[in-house]
Length: 51
Image (cartoon, rainbow, N blue to C red; front, side, top):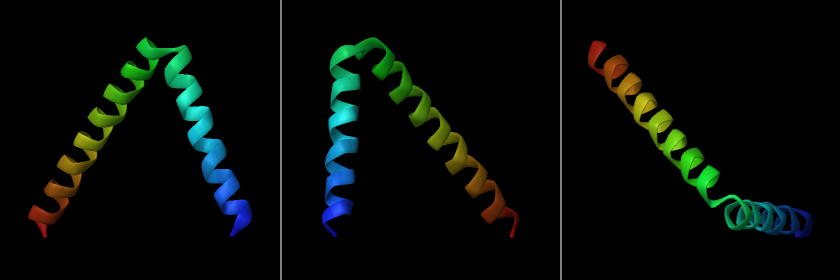
């Protein structure tokens, strides 16, 4: 459990440092992730409507 907490804190720290040092690129990545999730949601909707 301790190692999982340490890994989680480390991931948050790396993410925060990335956002602080590269805010423009972080915004682009966020937009790309949101677009990918929207495409995935559309694909799931098509599959479920076909069934």
